[in-house]
Image (tube, rainbow, N blue to C red; front, side, top):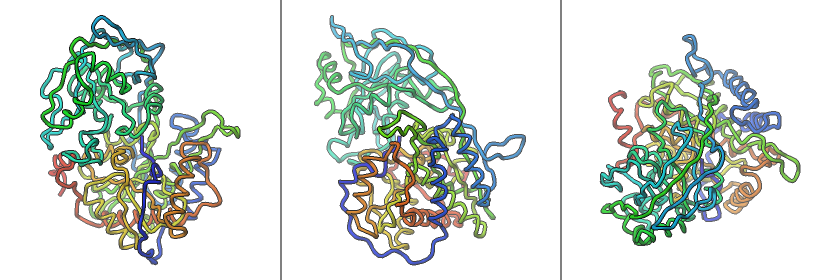
Length: 552
C-alpha cells in the first residue's frame, strides 16, 4: 500500500520559494472539481473493485475520456481495442483456525494468529498449508543484490526451511552503508523479501516486526496480513510466493533466537555487513497448518490514448487509481461510504484534464496514454497486473507519471515526490517546476519506503523510469503553517475515513497547478527522442538496460 503524502508532515520544515509563474495553464480546476464531485458522491459507493459501483465508475471514466478526445487503448477484442483491460485477481483468505507452534528443545510454544505471529493466506495456489518441524534460518535482511555485491544467503539450500529476516534494509540502523543510508531501497520492502524467499526455494519467510524500521506498529501488520489477501493471477504463483508468508513480533524473535544460543542485537549488527552468514537455529523448528479459501474475481483498468504523430509506439503514460474502500461499517454519524474524494478521485480528475489538454493541442510525436488502474488499495494490483501483462511493451514506455491524492488546499510554492526516483525523470520534473517558480522538496521520510507504495512502482520494477508526484505544503495563502495544518487535519479525520468527501471549501487551483506541471513534463517527454535513465547504482537500472536494444 502507498504511504500517504500527508503522513508525518509535522517533521517537515520548508523555506519559502519564489513567486509562482504567471503563464496561463490549460488545466481547469473547475473541470477537475466536477469530476471529483461525481466520483466521490454517495451514488458511487466508495468505488470498490468487483462491486456494482465498479461498473458505474468505469462507465463514467470511459465517457469522460471519450469526450476529452482520446481513443480506446485497452484489450484487443475481436481485433478492436476497447476502453478497458481485464484484471483477473486471486482472492485468498484463511479458512478456519491457524495452528502454529515453535518447538525448542523439549518445549512447545503455541503461537496465536494476530498476536505473536501474523500469517498471510497463501497466494501460491495451495488450498492447505501444512508442515511439521521445519528448520528455521536467520537470513539477515533477506537481500540478494548483485550490483552491491551483497548476498545474505551465501548459497545455503533453503528448501524445506523457514527464513527469519529483519525488516527494512541494512543501512536503516546506522544511516550509512551500501543501501542509500536512511532512505529505504526496494530491498527493504517486505514484498521484496517474500519474492526473494520464493526465488530461493524456501518453504516460507517471516519478517521480524520492529516499529521504527517498519514505519508502522504491530496493529497495522496484524490487520493487513490476517484478513483477505488479493494478488494478480499468475501463471506460476509458486514462483512468486513461498507457501508461508508472514510476520512475527520482535520479542518472539528475540526469544527463539536465544533458545538457539544466538543474540538478536549481535545478529542485527552482523547482518549490516556483506560478510554476514545465514544461521540455522539449532534445535528450533516451526510447525503450522491452516486451510485457504481461493476465489477469482475480475476487475478492470481503463486505458485511453492520444496517438503519437511520429513515433506512436513510444509512450508516455499517466497513471492514477480509480478505486477506493467502498462501503464499510457506519461511523458515529451513520455514514458507511468511504467516498475517497482526495484519495483518489482528485488524481483521476487531474489525469482526465491533463489528457484533455493533450487532445486539444497538436498531436505529440510520441503517444500519450492514460491508465486509470484498479485495486490500488488492495496492494497496487491494477498497476501490478499491467506491468506483468502490458498492453504495450515496457521497453518502449518512456516514463510513468503517477498522481495519487493531489491536495485541495490551494496553490503551493513547492512540490515533492514519493521517495527518490533516482533518475533523469526526477531531474526533469524539478527543472519544469523551477520554470513555474516552484521549488522541489525531497521526501522528508525516505526511510518509510513511500517510493514503493504507489502505482508507479510496478513499472519501476520492470525498469521504466517513473515518479509519483506529491503536492506541496508551502501554500501561497498561509505558507507552511497553513499547509501543515490542512495536511494534519486531513490525515487525522479524513484519510481512509468516511469524511474524505468533496467540499465547497476546496481550492481547486492548487490541483490545477499540479496538473499543469505534470502536463508540461509529459509534453516535453512526448515531443522528445530522449529516454530518461536510472542513475548508476539504482537497483532498477539493470532491468532497463536489459531492454536497451528495443529502443532506438
